[in-house]
Length: 237
Picture 1 (cartoon, one colour):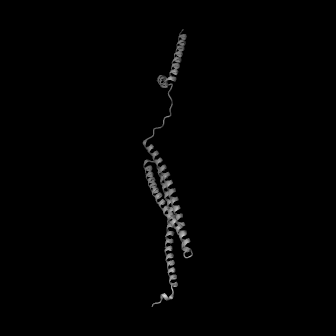
Picture 2 (tube, helix red, strand yellow):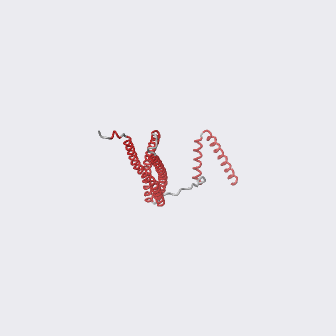
Picture 3 (cartoon, one colour):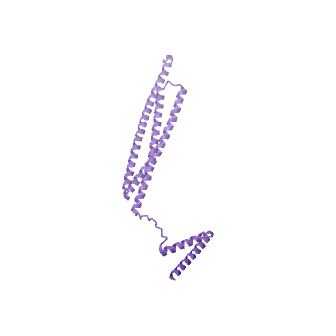
């Protein structure tokens, strides 16, 4: 008899559970919010009763302030390195273009000097227009170099600060890498600036040559004018 009573109670429990679930499902179609509340209540009850709905979430290890600071310092050095590499590339390209423009100007000026007295007025004017245009291009390239150099200097200072911050925070590897990147950037820019200085030196030499050649040419013209003056005009009365 006891077995029959337990079976009847179990059957009654199943029937009542089915009615509850059916009722909740019907209500959920009309009021989703209510179904959510019922479901949440049911899960809470089951969790309290037997822990059946406990979800085994993987917990993240707690990070200390020092660890978080080191990670942040590494991120700063990475972004600073990117900024430095981009500004270094831009500056080197600008210096290279400036050097090319200067050498082109030198070639034009020397070509003109070797052609003095051999060109027609129209040809001479044409060459001068090209020279003037090239000088303007040199000035533009020089302004570009100054602009990129200013940004590059700021990038170097930022990287030095980032390297120091990384070192003091305990991120020694990031600090060493940052300082290595700074040295590489300084070396690359220094090599490019040597080419620029060499071009400036040759341009100055060409300028001196131009002054001397123009003075000689003017003197030769004056001598020719004097030779063409009739002797009668040179004699004193």
